Length: 509
Image (tube, rainbow, N blue to C red; front, side):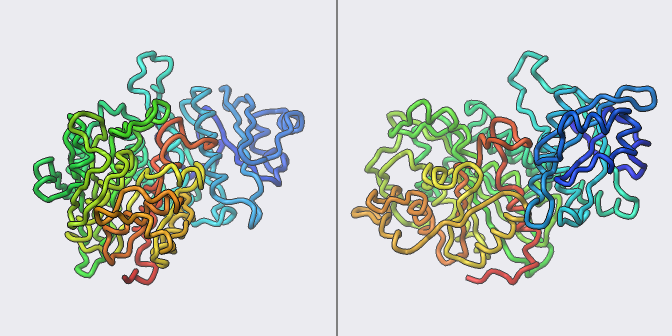
């Protein structure tokens, strides 16, 4: 576990196992000689010999001494920080690199000075928030199923961060907010990393209820009988093949302002996706425990909202199912009737996420009449192939909502790319025997786009955006602040969007 403490004393007056120095492309050993030289007598010579230049994601570790105790000097490169070159992402990765070094050396503590926020183009509060978010996020481990204690992370690390006394108040606010966000991200990652047999829809729903109770959120959980009674045929249809009954989880944050806008966030919650009757091959099925990532993100985001208390009404809706083949499973050719009365021809049982989202979106529109509606789903391989593993796909015909989401993306680091939603693609989901079909006609191609048009059919006139997180929810490479497994992508994005909602002109339908 990592603990983070702000400290106003000078670097060498803090007791730690390691002293950390961030260096940019203009690295000059003379700049660090006074401090680092007192810890390592041949500092300048070592820098030249090792060839450390401050390049992004580079590092240099030296062994020195301080107050008659052996310590490490850790230099981490930030790269080119000139305007137009560097950005906060290099700092995020540097912090992830720091955690990995600390863990590999089994450090009990390390210390560094908070960088100059102006150099990174951030306020002190935001820089501190980024720092705590990344340190806590990088320290996440999913190891509870590992029995070999040598492979488990079992010790505490204290991070002492130096800050000027005049900046401490703002920095502390940032640190506290960052910790709240990181805890939520790690919670979503934990759910996503859980074995699917240990996180069935009923278990997941109960854990969401317990979380809601802890943070003072209103929770409503509908069981199978409720779902059938409400004629949510999408959720009921997908769940037919599983022995684990479906759930529909709703969490609510109520603002004190009577005129507060309402934002509804809906997350796909398929706790395991075998493909159903249209079963997947094994190699495609192995990561399908992550098909509930969207639900994990929207539910975990609510714990952030509960603590930061924005003057926004926020509703999280998570339909939870398991998609399995059996004698009772839905079949290609079936027709489902959804909550808003529309019918769906099931062409492919492995396009099940959009079926449960149809009910979730329609319910949100009917019951809460939100000012903005956003869904997150590991929906299509097409989007992952188009954008790869670093960007989620944004689909919407509402330009103002798109602008808000893109702005939140730039601030938060959860990167999104807007893809087209031209009405030319809309006929792809038309059906000869139902209102729509759940897979677009192949002659239109653009599977991620036609999937978005399917979802749009259940949103009415509400300003709506769809985020396809299939490529970014699990297994993102080359990021020092991620381990193998889930990423919690979307929590930073949604938090930034909601917390800064009033800074822009309200969305209008």
